[in-house]
Image 1 (cartoon, rainbow, N blue to C red):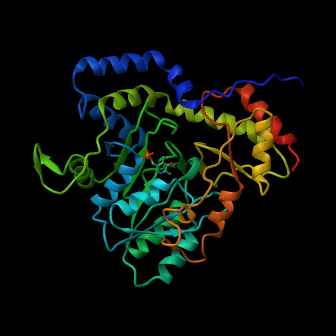
Image 2 (image 1 turned 90 degrees about the vertical axis):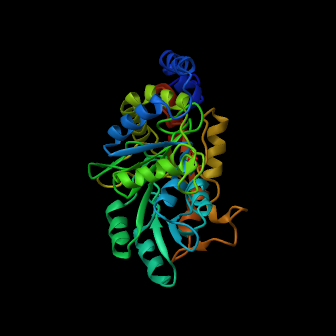
Image 3 (image 1 turned 90 degrees about the horizontal axis):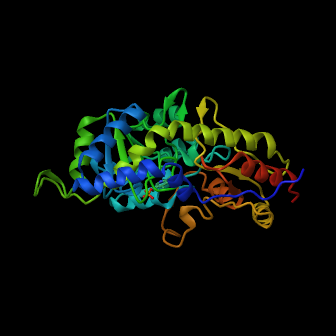
Amino acid sequence: MQNAKPEFPFQPIAEYRAYKGAIDAAMLRVCESGNYILGPECVAFEKEFAAWIGSENAVGVANGTDALVLALRALGIGAGDTVLTVSHTAVATVAAIELTGAEPLLVDIEPATFTLDPQKLADTIRANPQRRFKAVIPVHLYGQPADMPAILAIAQQHGLRVIEDCAQCHGATLGGKITGTFGDAATFSFYPTKNLGAIGDGGAVVTQDATLAARIRELRQYGWKSRYISDTTGMNSRLDELQAAILRVKLPHLRADNQRRHDIAALYGKHAANAAITLPPVRAGAEHVYHQYVVRSPQRDALMAALKLQGVPSAIHYPQPVHTQPAYLGRIVHGAGGLGESERACREVLSLPMHPQLTDDAALFAAEKISRWQP
Ligand SMILES: *Cc1c(COP(=O)(O)O)cnc(C)c1O
């Protein structure tokens, strides 16, 4: 079969071009309105996003890292507290915990799903009776839901708050329930490459708890309850009107965009089979939204180089677990059983081209190269 190398467009610009007319009009509307911060676009987006998730409240904030900081702070978590999460995640998850003054404790992952291992979570809590554990942050990494029923049961048993890091899972479900509605709060990022992405930074905290939402609204704007009067010590973390207006253009397409990711994943599943490569399994009862399509191989670096030679771009999410990165090395507490699976994942994972504007031709081209690769 002769196939000329297809294009692998850079996602953010491809996505802008797909919705260019509506995005340009929305941006112009904001510019002409003279209302640039916490105006009607943000209010409308918060309503629309909360409805899309099926939650009571969404609070727009500046980015996904701040969303985690604000959720933790609003839950009263800070210095002297310990928050459990994973080491195989975007560094932001761990950085946010430290920004509140709390201490992160990193637990290993299930190798098949790359998400928090509930058994190791329970073992870690049992092994550290002296610690003030306040919360757990499961990360639905790559768009795959973590094992929420097991995690919620452990959290309930130990009085832990649950904050879902939904930066990569907009729309993913487990047992028919959408991620972002399992815990006390859920945090989203709208960084340009996420399943729902702005043209700049953006984020949101989603919660069923109106009191918690109100506290986050205060904290995101200097702790103001009313203008110029700080009730508590807050910060500045607002979703601006331009980003909110752009997100409002894209939100109605999110379901179809996720479906497109799903179709590309199905195409990889069918055409990229190779005994030397593990394709990503989906958790029973879950709907994966493929923020990334991540395969694994012990010869990952050779695979990546071979694909690059043949014109297939790929990426590594993430090359190092958080606990081995220079800023964290030697000072992060590890969960029971260590972090061996997190370290192995970072050596073996490879993200294949995956986004809604990727064509079938491009995905098939990539799949064929993968299926024919010999280590
Ligand atoms: C992107 C991301 C974040 C941080 O979001 P920002 O908007 O970049 O601050 C947090 N957690 C995970 C898992 C992410 O992928």
